[in-house]
Image (cartoon, rainbow, N blue to C red; front, top):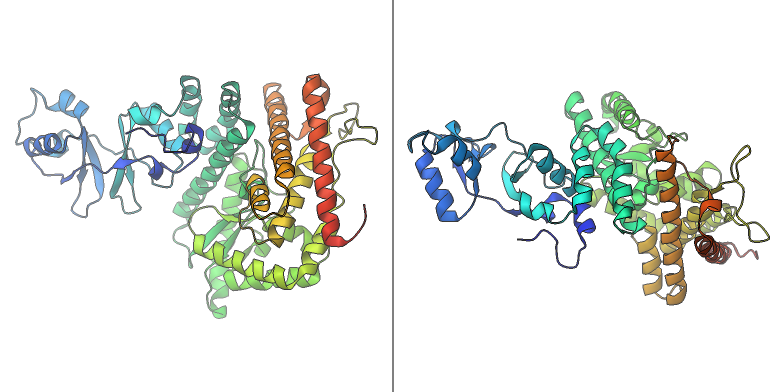
Length: 480
């Protein structure tokens, strides 16, 4: 069956989990099953593969038509056990693993079938090479192969993936969704590797990602913004619980740094106790920020509002978000204070309509993240929080505001176009920096843009300026 799901472009499928594209699980037989019986089972089921399982139902190998052709035909009798012909050790993926990663494994190992296994090793379904590769163009496949390596290699391959997708005509928003999906999956993999080395946690926990990764808008060089929600535990256990989490989170954040996610300069990471709390402590902390409404309390609130669980923990995150919504409804001054702080965000235009010079030294590039994307992100976030919109992505928030009538459809369309253009110019500049051997950043050389692109960028920044100023003033009452 084709892998492209109804109503989804191939890029949307690639950024989704493997479970969304897997077919039904094939037959599963015990390891001692005679090959004659196994082949008859495959023929009856009209399947090209079957799983080999142990006494607990855990998959330990796979038998495919290729295995039969290479190892069985004219070589093994029908009474030989499955173990004599199966392929092992088994290469597989998990249901929540990014589909891009599964396709990379299919390509790297030359597989026709990739089992999807649950945490207990039982087969939930099967990804088939022909259908999986049908979702990806030939030019992209070469880059996807690089995504089958270790986490550092995967992070390094992102620029090639992004460049190939843009060259094939995909929008920057679509490319950023894939980059963000890869970044999110890397967080999950590094978390799993760290857990494997440290052993079981003393209490269950949920990894939260915040900032651009929480919004689904991370570009090529995001730093870390993460935290943990720990399951509530008795106060008398704090010493032993914290003694386990201190080295664990230090190791986790260091591994992320080594993989290409720089340590957060502001310390917004799980290794900081401020960002590692029980659900009850998180609720109390948000109450403190809401009441204090100054300095770091406003900065931290701005960051945490975009949180999302990296894997699992949806119920815990939803409960925390529900508490936050109630808190905001009862403390409208909190949003007003944040609006006052955010009102300092300016767009990258001079008084006479030129582009601002944000580059130290002789250069004259413009920081279009700080002076383009961030005013739009901040204004949209505040309005979405006021209206109870639970989405964290900027584009989804704009759509939600338009659906509620909070902003006019025409303005929403202009803002969506402006957001897409800003993402496009920042991403393309990052790719140019990468190709030139520079660390990708947010400074854009607007002078190299075609005349039409520069004019479109001016118009987008003007729309962002008008929207953000009006939005902030709506909370503060100040005339701009």
